[in-house]
Length: 88
Image (tube, rainbow, N blue to C red):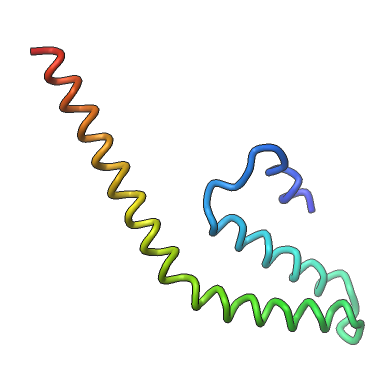
């Protein structure tokens, strides 16, 4: 839980960070509960379902990340051009 507490108040930077914490919660439940316990079994089942849904969602995530990088590159280029124009 320390890893999640460190993010308290700062928020997540992207959906991959959320995904990592979801995995961490399920893996912790599996690690700290006996394999035959209901909690372990439920966590294992939910992790499996989560991973299947994540794989369906991943192409959209990749596309959004690509768009964000492109927009950041465009904004950086625009700032450089503005700065160069101001120095002329």
